[in-house]
Length: 331
Figure 1 (cartoon, rainbow, N blue to C red):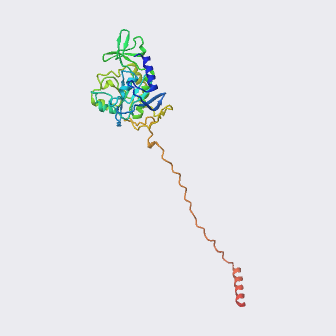
Figure 2: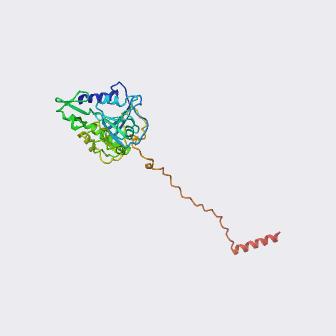
Figure 3: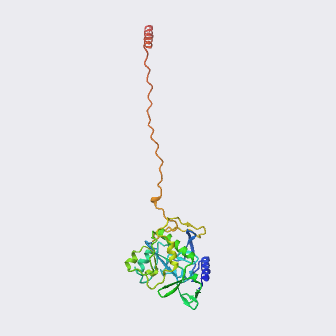
């Protein structure tokens, strides 16, 4: 499918939120994570494609879908399948949250180094809507389904990279690169995951190395039969946009166009954070305690003394005596 056809299908899906199997999704929350990048939380009317159990997250895994948005959403929310990822990013830069990133679903597959269960629980999966590996057919590059993706002269749509038997890979769009980078940094802040990218696309040496890794890795690092992601210019651009340290936390803002507000989960990350996904938590230790008004100083009450009696003068005493004698004599 050609890139322009993909974009039209993405726009159509965003308008009606119906997947290729006819399943309708509900937009529950829209979260602005900065720089115009938004996360759209969508859900079908069932949740049997992920486990509603919170697990601690310490890494992020990047995948590509080998498809387009409507089929991608279908595959990632198949009822009773429990194979999914928290996030899906389309070529137009829209980020869809399929389930809370503090919870989990299998996303690495049987035989994954470190174990499909253990690694899926401790990592947050991000699927990038992309056709992945391409094959040269005459002057055209065809996708995994045999459809023409682009002409070989349209090098803006692919990266030339020899990797695991393929020489061409569909590239990400610029807005998709920006969205994936913003999402990785947002999850890093939310779950305290370091911006430590796996240095290459080779598999981890052993289970212990995979399980102990903290940062961002690729499906190729745990599966020798996978192609997502080779070190193409698209992947290198994401790595370049993500700094080596997490930027200061910023509060995510709920979008004014959201259909319904739900109470954010406290991770992710399993979730590590919280998530409150949207708004980054402020611990109670950071909340100033209520300030009590200062007590008024006690007022010391001094008892009032009765006025002292005046002592009589000598003259007054003599006069008083004469008057008394006169009275006595009269009686």
